[in-house]
Length: 347
Image 1 (cartoon, rainbow, N blue to C red):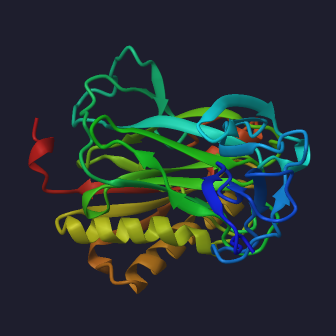
Image 2: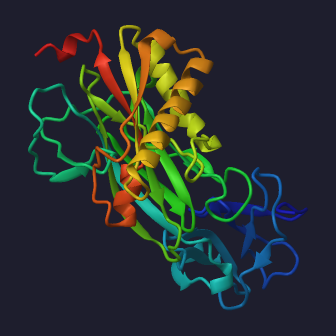
């Protein structure tokens, strides 16, 4: 196990949230306190592999303590020496002792203020609306205030069973900045939720990526005004079907909460497709998918009188259908606000 009758101290959990480094003077070391590593094997925190000593290339007859590992998982630092006579050392982790590589995701949550203009200029340049449409974000309301920012791996995206990892991102409500480390090889939903379900989500696909790196991601929260279109970025269906996948529930519950928080809101659920199949097929599929979302919401307490559904087929693309990335953006469900009593929109 992790603990013995000897001494264990200075634990360090790597960014993959599975690999634990610590110091111990247990039996089997090189002498004194050595650096050891163990890996979490289940979804909880009770099951770990048998700890391994990092070996004589790292450990000595003296004490090695206070280990830390950088985001790449390749470079580590520790204190080494005897008693109070310790120095800081840098060393490369042996490949089999490294944590899984991660991608560092950093960005900012923006509140887009109500305006009649469709253009906002800013020194920050362009950001993503979540529907794949670039928008400029000048005059954005910052700070964003309270809220939480979470991430969740989509079911089976990394080849395993179950829902995969999930967690809370480091988030500063004062300036809207956030940061999280996501293991490569999976696809993740990142979602910010403020008061009454108001928020935004985005998918980050790290499948096919084998080495660590960094990604900049800005999340734009549109104002809740008549005519606003809110992309439901984390609604997923079976391929060529209208069956909702389990990972859609987080987004659906968020929208249900938002409806409850704004009783004057009347919305249209709009289904869209790419142009891969025939116009007739795409029209039918878009209607069925909008209907599936309508059915889920009304089945979970939403007032049917405040919801309508419509399929647009392939008629309203937001990106080119010539690339897979563009087609993926065009396969979407949107939440269009038809009417809402919101004082801040009366400009």
